[in-house]
Image (tube, rainbow, N blue to C red):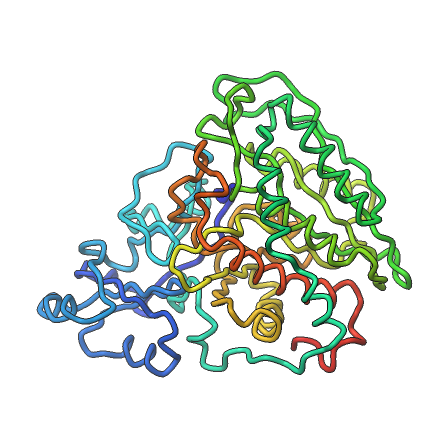
Length: 453
């Protein structure tokens, strides 16, 4: 998982143009609080400002009331004295460069303090992260929406597809993939590529590779010579709209602390991101004998840990050939198997240009994976392999866990299957949601009464 590429947040908390004085902060667990209670909490007289981060709420409170707030249930210590104008947000697992230490993590996001003068120019200066959004909502639990998406009428055809998702089979696939050293500079990456291709072929897909050169990487220390690596692809031709494509993707490369050292072993990357590539393979199995209107490309990217290079070069090739217009939707899977809160939190993210997709995915989850606690955001865009598809104008959605921010084995040799928590339940739910959405986006719309609107 690589989430440092231009995190798209725009957070300016208060309507006043005058800078607020820093006040004490507290963090409130707002899981399943409900819209009315959440709004009432934000409106309390002692609350100076509020910022919402999915299952947690950061509150700036009246200094005279801090002791009372600290006694409340579901409240933990905040991040000290803060004014909203000086808060800077970045994803906890950003790792492209040496980063300023964070004040702490709220709802999966790192918060830092920056002078307001720096924040005003930060997005233009390349500083990792961004300021707080105008409405104060970085991410929101569906259960806290004023009008949460509810289950739609179940389609028996889609339910039959969803029932094919086998979490045990996914876990076994992920575990085997984690046995390969998959650093992009490792000689063993080719063996992992071939293993993935074999599984694509076993589902009846036409197997191919997208080959590109990884070179001139400023974030590799020591520098590495150019290397040719591949994205394995499995292609299923659409029946009525073969020149319209849906891409289902995840990166299969891994790393430990050293980004570009292929000699270190092991580099298992079970959660990051054998879990996602195994999810792509599982969805290929689910659709093994399913005719779709649109063509579907199942793809596992390499070079992600060095800067999203596999997906970037693939998108650039489609732009050069004029084929990018064929891609009508992209589903990205990255880190599916760590349930940090015990509530099966799953994030669904895109940009504001495609915000309607959040409702569609939320409704699909409510209908076919109700065990998930869905958290949506169009204020963030974590840097994974959907990023360059979004940049090319492709409606793209990132589906993943909400535990990446606190996963203790991230980019370590201890990122092994045994250290993932409730992996089968969480990944199984995410894959059921994605299977339902793939059914719709690939052209099984006749199987839905009204879709997931």
